[in-house]
Length: 303
Ligand SMILES: Cc1cc2nc3c(=O)[nH]c(=O)nc-3n(C[C@H](O)[C@H](O)[C@H](O)COP(=O)(O)O)c2cc1C
Image (cartoon, rainbow, N blue to C red; front, side, top):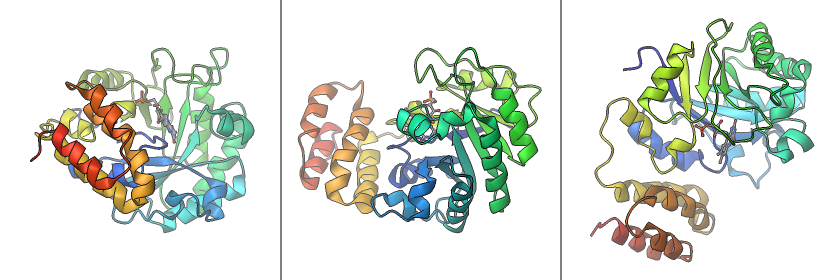
């Protein structure tokens, strides 16, 4: 349908964890999915408070592991660990705008202000692994500094295989409509990101020279979205999908963490349905797995 355009699932901290990737896989066996961002410090120290430091990707198909950090050597070491854990490619975060990452850690979007450091990291990571390396960035720091093309040039020179461009600046955070520039003369393949939801959006970015499209928030509560955009029917009973996703979350996190974590997914899956706000309020008070399963069954009419 989209010729050679690849559709990716975006990295979404708190969302594209192993359980969500597992449910997406049931609909889209081959779609490339990027993990939540992983700190180079946290993974190289194998910090126990962060489950994803121990994820194994061998059974996950085409999954790229995203790292963030500002320490050149630790970024290379983190990439190696993720390669050994079965990641199919490494994505370097150069766009995260949150102060904890971009200001305090000097990572994420900060690298758009320091292209020299960004290039050192790219070269070190490319040297450290045998799998492909990509970057994910934004248009620039603010509207006065729209210098994404310099970063792309440096990425191409460093051996980075492709890049994702989110059509906003750091200053814009997630506000206003994403605006994607023409990339017909870019030196590496570029994946478009920002507000992509429909087949028309994907066709639109193809015309601007993008090699693919990456979908983030439109996947909330719709793990089947990419399969649907490629012509499949959405699931007949969403409640079955919700219950399976819940099982995967329980497997991975255990009930104590999974139940509060899963509330946002329930809210997204039920958004726009009759009585969804009452259902959300009810689910937000549930602390018992069996009660939660009964509530989900009742809401979606599963006997
Ligand atoms: C809840 C949330 C978490 C995100 N986490 C990450 C992340 O870990 N790494 C990253 O590069 N971008 C992250 N992003 C940005 C998205 O990958 C994407 O660039 C952005 O949401 C725009 O795409 P969309 O309009 O399709 O959602 C996050 C965005 C949201 C809303």
